[in-house]
Image (tube, rainbow, N blue to C red):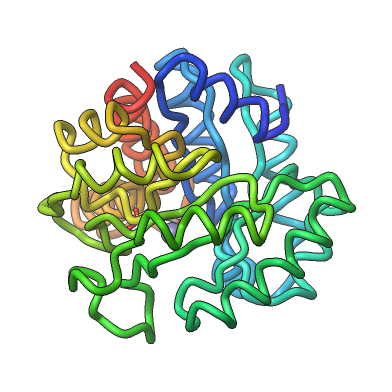
Length: 281
Ligand code: G3H
Ligand code: ZN
């Protein structure tokens, strides 16, 4: 069934676990993620990013409705989240499009600008009943972004984080603790001591972005240190594309997309099952 993000995050926090949020680009992603969640017996968040909406011609409704329908049909609790929103106009469509939560992304902006923009986003979101996540400390690694995510200076400062959360009223905080978006190997090493200090300083759940680049043991330690929501995108695309490529290479005369999409979807579902065993187990 489709449940609110708030519910999944609160349950995970109370149980000392994390809930994984996987990025949905196509219908096959939503099907694979829910199949993997069902196989693992773990709840999951389907998240659609502003970039994915752009891929669908700027229209959020078709992919959001498809993901919501897939979520409703799942035997496991599934929530729908709008990810990395920079455009307030898109944010304002979130509730109508079926999202119970969103991440407003002003993480690349200077502190004062991030604060002002996020405060306005929270005001709208809470009026619409939408749970809002924001980012402080800039995770980086997205296309066209400065490639400085591993520099110490961009890590989230606990004292700044505490006042940011108090001043904006956000429901969850994405923190920069050593991960970076779009890594294709799992070599990131996280600052677990910083995660613990952030957990002590900040009253809302902490979110790890760029988690594809984080290995199993680092993910387990991050959850123990206080991360409650774990965002994963690239890892699914690696699994999907590898399976599609292998299927096409082995069947050069193939024209029907279903055989290769099915193989890609199966590979994604298995990746989801394994990652859920790590973060929600
Ligand atoms: O918000 C989405 C995530 O941060 C995904 O990052 O593609 O590096 O796993 P990733
Ligand atoms: Zn992210």
